[in-house]
Image 1 (cartoon, helix red, strand yellow):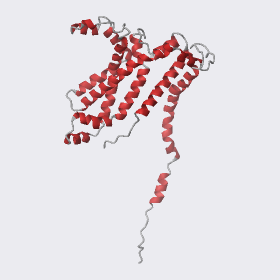
Image 2 (spheres, rainbow, N blue to C red):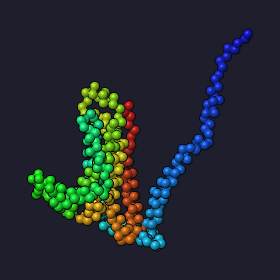
Image 3 (cartoon, rainbow, N blue to C red):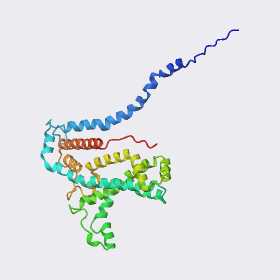
Image 4 (cartoon, rainbow, N blue to C red):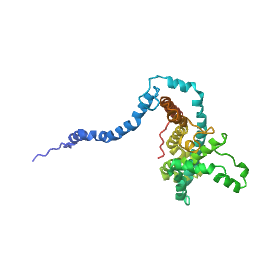
Length: 310
């Protein structure tokens, strides 16, 4: 009986071709899951932004029909009124506070990423302020800074009563007080971001560094810092955009008085106190453009680089 010596090709090609032809319904499945989130995003984010840009070209007062179309008059008014842009000097205090906040968060995250006693307790203590409502924090620090309040009492007990002053009433001091409150408020968020990034670094890198005799500072400089660089960049973007649009704490604690008024407080007053919604919308558009510009410049100066620590 004759037998064939030619190898028999397995029917792989036929199956492969069949496998590559994905059913049309299966290919559309990811898009079906995206429809509802995209609709919500368009409804509650992009459509209001388009509306805001439209209102910024009108003289609408916020009540009744949309006002007369005035073109770029609102933007010209913003550019020709120095007091509207002058409040951005207040943002400098918050930007400086953000840098301090990021450095503190990075310091605590690095310390607590190692095997430290009671580290879970310290993690909870550092993150807890971020869980508190911003209004509650504003009220707490309002009593903390009031004359004869907690801060003055602590200073008096420490023999430093002469340092007591109008923490929220003195224009030379008020922005330091508010910026310090912001540090306390948002330190926990940066701390958690940094801690998660540090803990995602492969442990064998630390073991190799220990074998090579690297100090903790050298481990931080050559392992930790490169490993969390994208998170550090993200934190700076969030910090700068938050500093330019700060509202909650100064509005609750001072209402923008004594030189603590920010651009957002001014925008809200323009819309709801002076009923110039068109001008307020133009201010909001200007703020949006400034934040986008700052973010773009920051990304150009410090671009993301792919880090491979494996």
